[in-house]
Image 1 (cartoon, rainbow, N blue to C red):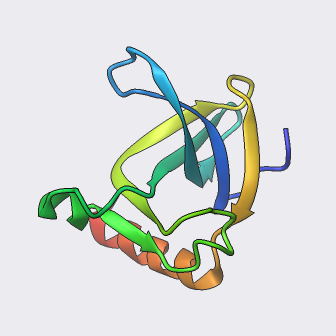
Image 2: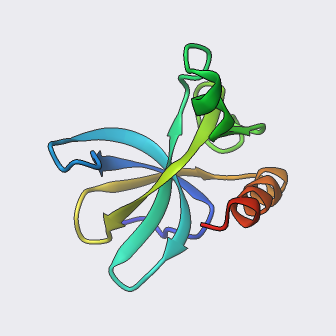
Length: 112
């Protein structure tokens, strides 16, 4: 596994919250434990979402610098835990300092 750091952007298989399956998604790392990597999912689907869902998304301004192929948003609705030794993890980039600051502020305001 490539070195994963807090604010790394990675691609991995993320399980659905109801545990009925999983899907490969980009995600941003917000905490690293001994066995678990805590992440938020990243999505490029924004325009068709409801106003409520849009209010739960944080735009990644420097998405290209983060290694993403399309304009993207951090889905702040739910944290996802990934086992370090579970699914394959590929680091594709890192949030810019400006996006890190915005993410920290959002997390502080929501008290995750």
